[in-house]
Image 1 (tube, rainbow, N blue to C red):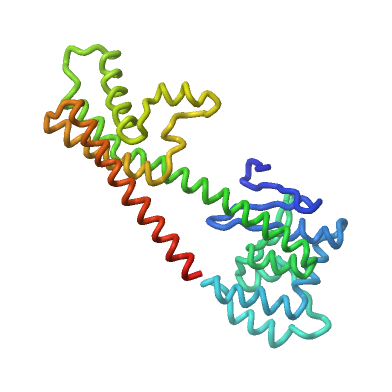
Image 2: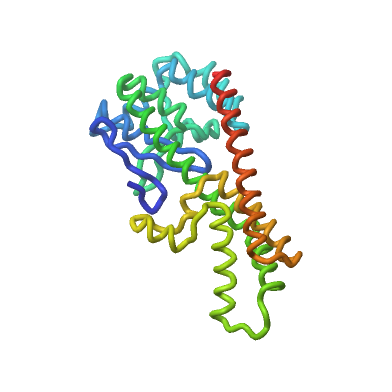
Length: 282
């Protein structure tokens, strides 16, 4: 369940874990995972893990590989002067302050939701806590990334569908809209052209699709594949050219349908071959 900050809480094997979107990454709550060991004082669990030499080697190496602003000089000082001694203690706040770390985000403020970490580090921490729980966490993280990818594809699809919209409507306005048409008649012309594209690509009108799919929200374009929307953008542009050339709709729909069919076949074949190659490599 997502909150207004963009965080989401998910129950994993009986434990509620918070995921937080930070930039392009989904960070995971170390505080929640630590409750597997100590519900009353999870911060102490995190501190013990960070103080562990093997853990220190892992999250410091992560910073060296992933953080261009990592304070390597201070890291070396800690490793030489502090690490390995009984008095050595590391906490998220100390680590962040001394090295400008980005892999572990310490808790801060009265209403803090705890310490978060990059998935690479959070999974290592989970392994230290409970290797079985780590597997459950990996599965949930993969599910969230899958949903995130679907959302990105959805956004891309919607943007793609708009690419040639202005070109298309301008062509209709300049060539098919006459000065004496009423507002309703003008709207009908636009809708009629849009539906012609629907028939050319999907083989169906918007109204027929809605009648046949009463349980689905939106319209047929909302359920189109990325390949279909790419072709839609292309035939919108092509239709604008055909309109400017003065071709009647009866001729245009045939040409548009043939173009859509060829482009879909090409895209589908290309994607299928790419998947085969990827499968062979992996």
